[in-house]
Length: 276
Image: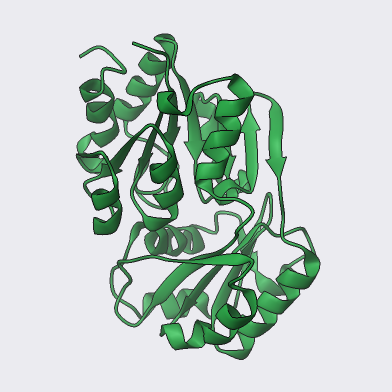
């Protein structure tokens, strides 16, 4: 078969949300796929600092920060933080309307005081909410907002009780930014990401394919949540995890078993990327 470029989301796809250790079956499948001549990339909402623990397992590059920072081999293909004026406006509008904010730089993230308490007050949710819950509990590079050092910011994670709180920010920013709302929120919690319209995961896939001279038809994407939608819509063949968003399943070519049920390894075998 043609050599493929494989793009893997992390939380809820490669790993249990908020953790950094993939199942052994997934690691074996990734090694086997690379040995067969395929190239394997991370494609994640995580910034470089939060995805870096996964790089030890062997990848050919990554699409980080939801497409805002793209690396192929040792080469940075794309680097697009928010402008300072847009960052300030978004932060002010969220704060004024009681929206909890987590800002992601290249290496670190900073969150509002009280976010952990708020998250603890709501029920179970989607993989992105669970990722942040676990990350806050484990202090995986997420620092208090009071310690924000002015680093360039690639995106803002937001959480609030209802979508009405987002209305002022939408009115001011939606022309330039997507409000990517997760479609399986916990009760009393709206969570999502403010992502620059200049990039997304799909754009990251295209940048890698172009850099390698690959046909987009020879790309395969694996995801589980709505921040994977542009990747799923871009790749030549798309796979959603069984533990994933119903809307993403409907948009995908294939649904594979959940991450805890060796889903990636089984999908790799079913697609002929590795030998059975």
